[in-house]
Image (cartoon, rainbow, N blue to C red; front, side):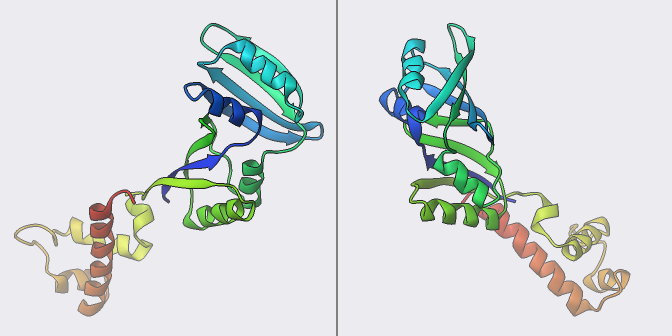
Length: 208
């Protein structure tokens, strides 16, 4: 599965603070809905604590907040909003679990998650439907053979390696390999060719 790095438009008081103070960092540790509202736990660094407190106190969407930790280096706050932020709803609608922790910086939520192509497509569809801006920064394909190759391709490549088909000089011919795997020579050649093509393309292309 690919590992996706992306930026998603942030909303609410934290988005406003991160835009006004671009050097500050707001790390979302968790976020979930309850009967009383939507709960978020955030760690704030690089920002005057009184500024952060005033923001929570004046935000009309924040029902309540509690400071769980206050030190020179960071402020840990749990707050309850009336509704779930729009990006969170998009993730829930697309069955894409939020990849906590997530960083809010300069008006964007920065995320990195390992997901499927289908889930990524569903998530971006939901973002577009909700008119939420986003940017895919990079997609790194997995180089795990268990994910690149089918079971049959992996079986043939493993057998070819074990029998010395890729050695120089070869210790096993294609005919020998096909006989060992109980298929004809053309079938063995086709399966190996497709597997080799997948591996080579993955190696040469790297991150998208």
